[in-house]
Length: 282
Ligand code: SAM
Image (cartoon, rainbow, N blue to C red; front, side, top):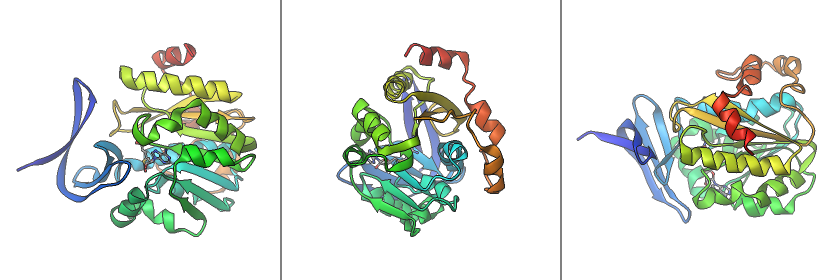
């Protein structure tokens, strides 16, 4: 019998990948965790039946959530990742020698353990001495910091279940407080295409826009995410994501990327008209 992973993107649209075998199935206090093996996309992590990453296209998401802010702050020292228990974002940040420490705060230790075992492509980073893992709720963790981090990356699940709190005004306000005076926050910002996702994205943007003086949206093509069209939020206390990007310095670091490059960075902030319209309504 053929095995397929299917995710409902709307009540009328679903996306399926043929699965060779199930490698792991677990249930934590917070969510169901599955790791599947597929021919086309390699290993796949799903949480509560929603696709989080595949080995084949995770580089797009992790490069875009990391190198866009890091090319504006190429000398960042202290980085906080909220969520990101698969380790992909930490892997990309570790490529910067100037980063002294990464605090990674994921609510669910079982995600990190399952990924360490089955998806070392991303999770090997979690055992680097510069990475300190804290297994707790990011909403609570961030309340205790002031003027601490150069960069906060919110690599969360969607705005329901355990990830809900990471899309609230309280959370964004506390991220602002936890950042240094020239700090940047980047978050995964949902998709603009289907109405329910687009509503969540607009609401998140509205809250970030109210919390930071500079707030912009950028995009990437991620084949296995709903509609394939994915957005990220760039919020900053001081720096503009294009005018203040330090691409010459970034190029000197000689970080080899497969998706990110400075031209694409600038272009990623040029949004389709229908997305601009959603953002303008905020
Ligand atoms: N790249 C994925 C995406 O956008 O589909 C997200 C990556 S996944 C590893 C997100 C992580 O956020 C999960 O490991 C989950 O446990 C974690 N998470 C969810 N809610 C959280 C919370 N309140 N605090 C910290 N981590 C949370």
